[in-house]
Length: 306
Image 1: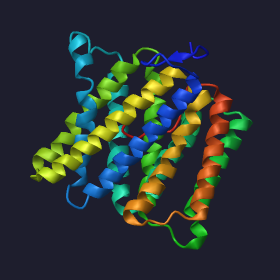
Image 2: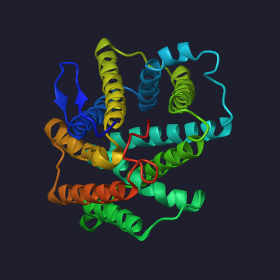
Image 3: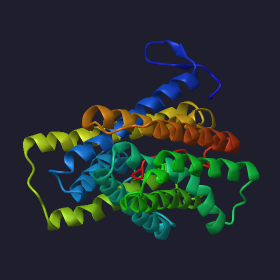
């Protein structure tokens, strides 16, 4: 199907790779916008409120699916893995939102670029999957790009970046768990279980320490949720049009969008080493994706919340 022209609603035929690439770029812009709204709201809204509403808005779009599947929605043979995935995903989200509040938007978004390169390593030790020499090279190149981006020779890195590394590891673990569940669980059920679990769990601290929000803050929270949902839906649509092996590299554009937003809104510097590091990471991601020829070996960068 991916090799056939794709017709949009106006009857115009577009190359599916071009269309999917444009959708992915828009999705990553939405994800960068989500992170920007988190950073903007954090001084006035507790970050654990933001984590809850991020999950709550994602859960809302699953309600139609829940209504259709109400008799079988919770039926599963992989409850333990769903719980592990939920714990790891929620932990990654809390850490990621905390990191956003402490460092520049581009550096925080770097979490999204590190996670895909950790997935094969985790799979190697956990699932005993073999990693080829070419894939090891791509992984090494990716981490080299991270070092260039962070430029540790210019001075000590903020301690909070250790939390970013942990968030990336947890996010990568969720993708590995998903691969274990994929043989028996549908993608819709996997997404539903995580959204349900994350919404319920992250609601607990919000109910314990609720903070009343002004109308302006509610609008900000709603904007954050809108960006997140739009990004997730658009990314899903893009990968239904063209395979990740052809367009997945565009998911790495998020750090460039984050850097641009950070510069325009907060005056955060986006230096040449950050730009060069981003290019190296993108090249490494492209090499890994082309090597895998699909999503099974090296998933593309996705938000920890996904």
